[in-house]
Amino acid sequence: MKSRGALFLDRDGVINRYRRGGVLSLEEFEYYDGTPEGLRRLAALGMPLAVVTNQSAVGRGSTTSEEVERIHRKLRDDASSWGVSIAATEYCPHLPDGGCSCRKPGVGLFEKIARELDIDLESSVLIGDSPCDIEAACRLGMTSIRVLTGRGEEPLGEGDGADHVAEDLVAAAAWLERVRESEVETDRQ
Image 1 (cartoon, helix red, strand yellow):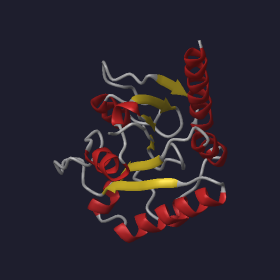
Image 2 (spheres, one colour):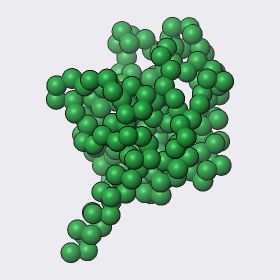
Image 3 (cartoon, helix red, strand yellow):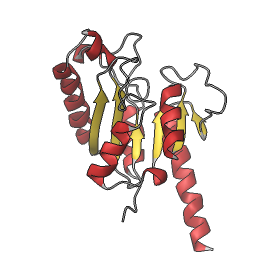
Image 4 (tube, rainbow, N blue to C red):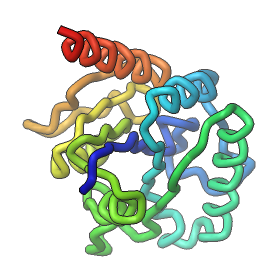
């Protein structure tokens, strides 16, 4: 029986700087200043961390799957040096009109990770910067946090509001810490 949730994070605009057209190479991959602290604080919550990202630049031929994997290796290695384990990194290489189930707001990648790591999606949290992130979380019944880094200022469609809006990854982690603390207090009563 699945009993634990996970923390799902979008990549570009949440962990690293968003670039219009995508992060096409390792040289363009640049963390936000607060990324190490944010990831450490999230990891301290005791839930597996998973990165789920749309990378249509692969489908457009602007970058390769090998380059995306190089970026993800660097992310996992850097996170490890910060004392953080990333349990999964998954991406959709397809174009927006490709009709696949893995491109957010599709839920295919989330379901794949949930199967592999025995994750309860309804007990999970997604941190993203775009409307498609929040829509995917809504479809899965996850708690959603929208960060204002990256594309966070873009308007959401009606009914697609996040459960919480945070300035950045550190502020998202701080909110989750407060939620966790209040749950512990409630359990003690």
